[in-house]
Length: 224
Length: 246
Image (cartoon, rainbow over the protein chains, first blue to last red):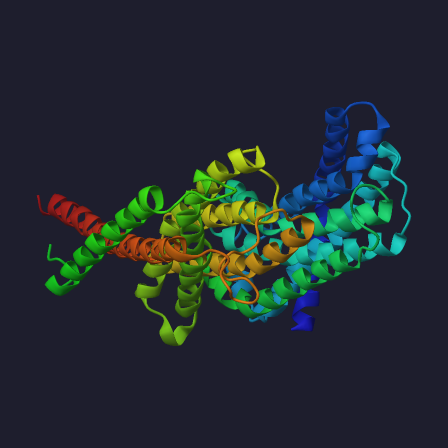
């Protein structure tokens, strides 16, 4: 399973390195979203600092939708989806591999977005640990759910419109918990004193969906 | 085309319809005329005979049936088209009940809290549930092979069902200002009495019956529309063949 996961993740990341679609299109898009939030909230710094944590995670959610769409667009042409299914790779390995590739791309996007939040909104990080754990757990959860829904929508003609509609409500807990954890870490808003319960929630979310994906990806591949 | 269910089934469904409509009517009568107004909430308390029963059907019964039957379809030993249809019917009727939960809640919230909508924990998670259910219905409407559709929908329902407890807890921590549970509180001693408690109980029974009736009707529609798809194909095939004969 792990070897298969490495193979699939390596394949997806190699394609990304050569095509640079996420880097050249999704990353600028995420920065544009940050700028749009700044336009919407006005030129004053105060409301932007206040909202920085939530805006970061909303931008990450938008980026997840695009990254997942890109990841499964790779399999849409030339019968690669059937090829992958016939390759004899463990479905759980394929799931983990695709999720890992999405997660790596998300981490790059999150670094960019975090830098943007600090630079453009003037947010000040007080606790780097909480920020990092929140990003790690959130990324794992988002990549897992994203891969599941990506595969679910892959064989469908209306996938571009279907995916965000299905995916975004399900990841609402990540948005809530991520925002609260970041509010604690940035010292803004009613996050409370400690980010621990929120970080734990995100870890549980990630664990649940990684486990579900490992179990269910085999039958899921047959649906498309 | 022969009717795919026996006379006895038809009569059972009809009886269920009559009983559920009568009991809903009795709930309305008791709730609006017989029971007294509340000391604090006055006539607003009458919504309590409707809102919690609808919410029980929407949040637990309908979604639970849909989730369990999706699981049973996915498990190869119990796989049957019955579970697929039951999941679809339950989710669709449940969506109506979830929407009604939100509407009746808003009608109560406006005079009590002063707003139609508040970002309270239960409201937020119920709204998220409604969106998840609408997502399932969207999956359902995608045309294609029935087997693939059943698989897709069952897995979609499972991914959403796993999310429900997580949403519940996260939103609860996030914020809460909803009234605590009245009947099923921690020490199981109801905080309402007499005729009001009985009316509430009848409300639960009657809306559950109404749900069961709507579920059977929706299930029958599902069976008929599946048949119709097959018949349409047959007709089209026969037309093509007859063109070939000429």
